[in-house]
View (cartoon, rainbow, N blue to C red):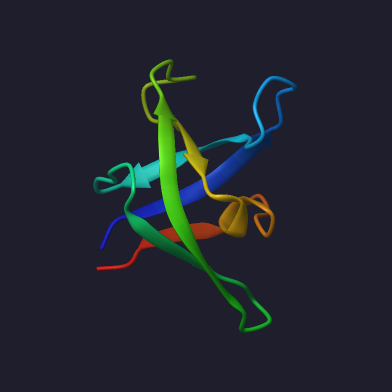
Length: 83
């Protein structure tokens, strides 16, 4: 199972979905199913929609997730692949 720890969330005016910046452990693919488990017990599911090729630093990646995921994200959340 791959995981992605959320470091920051960047809304940009020219895109409907924000860039989510974080650290990945393992690999993700566009279209892959993912989930985030919230402290209150909710589980939000969605998909990876895309990647940005510009890395803010060598250990950070910018990923675009479906709205069903990013609407519920907070810094420190961990997104996991569903396999």
